[in-house]
View: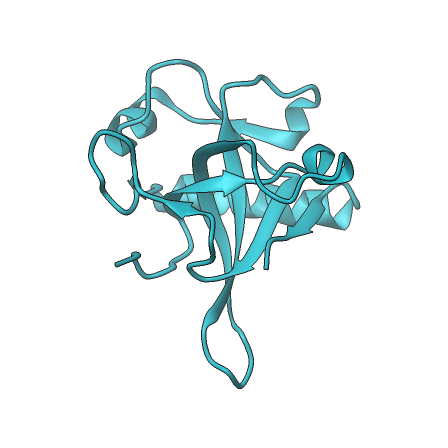
Length: 142
């Protein structure tokens, strides 16, 4: 059973990058941690539409386009100790739980856990800022 979709929850998702979609892919190449940043009721049929941003080991080309995860947060989520960033300008949107939600490897848990509120607020402000600057790319996954 999937967890309830709440903002700040870190899930595992087959994230589809915009460059993968532009190359004709319809499925994400890699399952990765992703942060739920948006939840909206999905109309009369019920359900919830979510927006998620990816977590990656790849350093950003534009430092304003990502936020590095602190070591204590990575530990609390059960992520590895390597440097990792939350990407602020790539968003996947889908009706929860969608087809691309995955269990966490080695534990079969349904999520990594919640981000600290202050960090989540910083990420959300960054996503909104990138959107206002028209630097955010939204990929529909339904």
